[in-house]
Image (cartoon, rainbow, N blue to C red; front, side):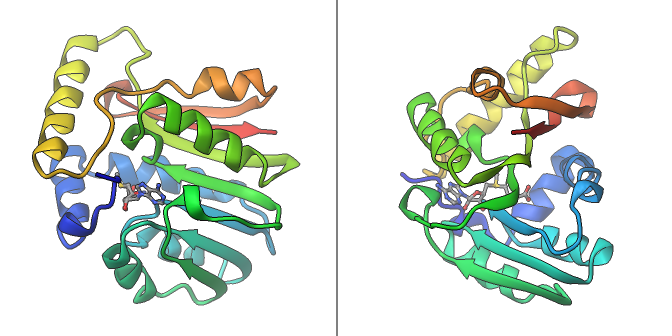
Length: 208
Ligand SMILES: C[S@@+](CC[C@H](N)C(=O)[O-])C[C@H]1O[C@@H](n2cnc3c(N)ncnc32)[C@H](O)[C@@H]1O
């Protein structure tokens, strides 16, 4: 089991919309205006690649995007997207197996860390931290149980989601790892935090 979404690549977006309406999209789209022209962007676990089209709507040229996705089917779907005159390099690897000397202006990890058990989450965080320039931004979007209001239904929904993904044999984690402490330990500052879906989804922009 390695968090590869091949099995549900063709249905993933529909499932997401059925359960979360547009919350998962909006949480990510609303962050994109922070990206400046000609930025070098690393997207990890971008799924079907709809984010590439949203990026192109805001910035139709000059972005250099490295797109690391463990699912070959997700990569194939992403390659069909219209990303205009931005450059996209698709890399079909788990992020753990990706190595680079480049450093990035922006890193996006939308709904990535919720797949990982704590030790993998910490390892991937440290790896990506090494790829981000000082003063650059990291867009973290994920589920959260941190806000007290409505904790029971969030907990129940999360448990059902993990059970569903376990039945399919996709997701490795059994519970969420709160990533905030790792960012704060590395002295990241919070530039923006927005909540969606009754606070079950948190979109945070961290500055290194
Ligand atoms: C929950 S989906 C989110 C997809 C997309 N970010 C979205 O919001 O629509 C997680 C994605 O991360 C990919 N993924 C999981 N583990 C990964 C890893 N170690 N390296 C790269 N991609 C990974 C999966 O294949 C899947 O496409």
